[in-house]
Image (cartoon, rainbow, N blue to C red; front, side, top):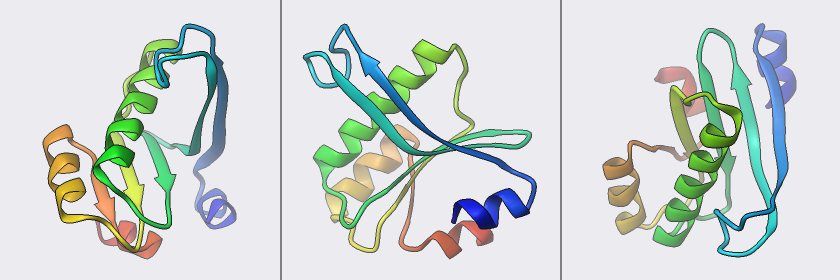
Length: 109
C-alpha cells in the first residue's frame, strides 16, 4: 500500500513515538500509527484484522495524542479492517472515524 501511495505522489510514513506521560495507555508506552499520509491533507490510518469498540477508542486516543504532540489536526482518521463489529462501526461514526473493509474502498471516497 505504501509504494502505491508514494507512486501517486503522497508522502507516507509510520508514526512510532514514546508516550512518557501515559496519555494513550494510562502508563508510559510506545504509540504507533500504521500510516501517516500527507498530500494537501493529513490522514492517519490503522490497518487491523478486526475492529472492536475498544479498538476504535484506542485509535481515537492515538490520533488525539498525535494531534496534540505534533501540533496538527488530521483531516481524516481511517480504520481499515475486513471485520468490524457493528457497535464499533457506530462508535467510529460518532467519533468521526472512517471505516473501510478494504484499502481499495478508499479510492471511492
